[in-house]
Image: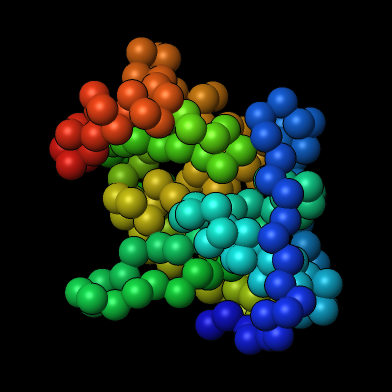
Length: 187
């Protein structure tokens, strides 16, 4: 659950774009006792506000010029009609569940207006700390698994281009919407 605070102090952070060295650096793990500090809690809140402002589904700390192993994301929910609250995952460790890989469309706030098909594990488990410093374990599949893998890649200095098998599907957003969006439902 997101900590509530005065929206007057909300900050929209500047998002690093492809080419910035921070996006290629491995982020530093947080010590558990540092997670509940005011600075880290504000960073998480500001990352959520930034993600929402830019209509993203995930945002990693390196994308906002912070070399920390934190990302925020809005993951799928099981209940129809229910809206997912953004979550923060800190020091995530991913384990693929099974060998099945699926190609799916991805975009990135650090690479605006570009889409491409990226192979990812269909099912994963992830161990991390939540924003309260509690150890959590999640099972994820399909869309949520893709988001978690994409954001964790940012913590390791990896961009989705690096995972693409070929660049044949690399498309500007306008052309993706015009020519490729029909494939999105095939995933």
